[in-house]
Picture (cartoon, rainbow, N blue to C red):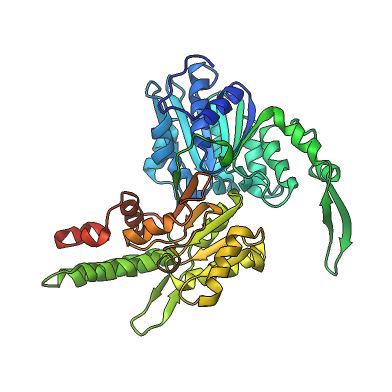
Length: 481
């Protein structure tokens, strides 16, 4: 590759991916979560811009990820010599957002990047705005979908819209760690987004006929095709190799031991209302205290944190639940990762809700829970099965119960559905997967509710700050307000 000025030094597998792909008009980066595919895309955009091939880019990503591109990924990896103007989609669109989007419609010597949550494409307005952006740059645009399994459903509105939009751009990329979540047929619409000629099938049903054994069934209300199995999969694998790069974490020997990822969610309207009410109550209560203690502040933090997790315990002992986005984000993450997963949750009823949802989605034998209610005699059996049995994929635990002493090195992915404020509990729970016997790097994923104490707790824990020592005196206000 030519003398490209990286902002951050690539790992060997990232450099190989870039060298293999950057000049190709269509390419699939099939790289495990935690292997740095975001950096490869940003370096690709920068290299094509330097070469005069593009002057703009559109990046689609799921709701929990897309703002991270603006806040973290692009600032971290875009080379310093490139003047870059970035705008992102928001709903509802404020005047400031509209102005920032209009500003990048006008081509100049800068690189213009538009970031949008893929879910927005279900509306005609978002598709219209993206199409205008690409056309204003006369097609000199790279368009990419991060976690491209979000368009695996060939009949979904956002899938159809993304394919229509892609036809107006010159360069196209898909990024995912697990292109096949449930069946090889998931590949069809992802590669159709790149180019309808790549797989050799313009019809989804012709593609299915080639790679699936199906039989027509009729129920009382409708007819449908039932898939009995798959065939010609070696042919399918070979057909995508020229325009894809696949790497797993096990193959990346130079990765750091621990990789940290944040997946953001928004509070629902009901949560926001309750959260703001509780925050006012907490501030008024602490303001009235003659001496504010750490326990008093942490009690209010926990109440706010519970609301961010979708519930609140009332003074009379009742549990009130709210609709929230945490579970859907967890399910989205699990579609993107392979292998065994540890899921830590701070609250008992969350653990049971996760167990119920994963048992429904993946089967009861794939899930086990480990918390205060778990029978003492069953606990060691759960750990041994998680370490040795292929069936048991998900270990769902409460960090205070399962975060100490256990060896869970069969997992390379650890998800914090919710955190406690206790730094020791966090560090101990991280080490269940990252200890002697672990032969791979471990990816830690925090699900975080934006603009809440949840964000502040995770930020403090990652910086190894003991929150209990930081909330005394006037410092308590910065945690709640």
